[in-house]
Length: 147
Picture 1 (spheres, rainbow, N blue to C red):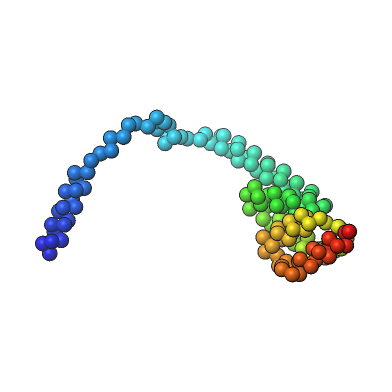
Picture 2 (picture 1 turned 90 degrees about the vertical axis):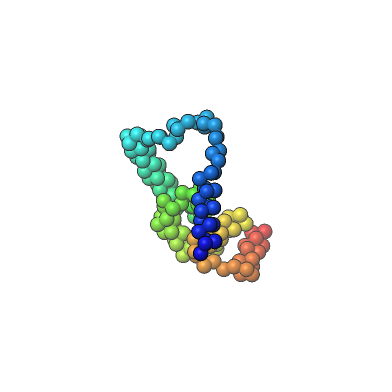
């Protein structure tokens, strides 16, 4: 018991005798600690963001006419990190593309980049695309047919 009390007293003495760092004052001052953003400016920026989101949503809907352009635009939104604003629209577009995929592949002669982009974007959004030998055979068949 006595050892525990001595240890506690020793620790208290060490804490009380701790030296100060004596760091020089910061060059930046405290201006960032007291930063306040005017509410009117915040509301203005919020309105601008909503307008831009509507513009991008319109661009996404107009890109539906061409599946390749639509996939590339969805890929762009994902890579920019803003796709979460348009989750339902992206999901609807990809569902339409996925449902029409056999017809798309038969009607159009897509290059390898487009097919791989289509494959990757659909897989990243949870669509069950064939993998491994199946997709490789499909790609080879498309490449052979195009020559």
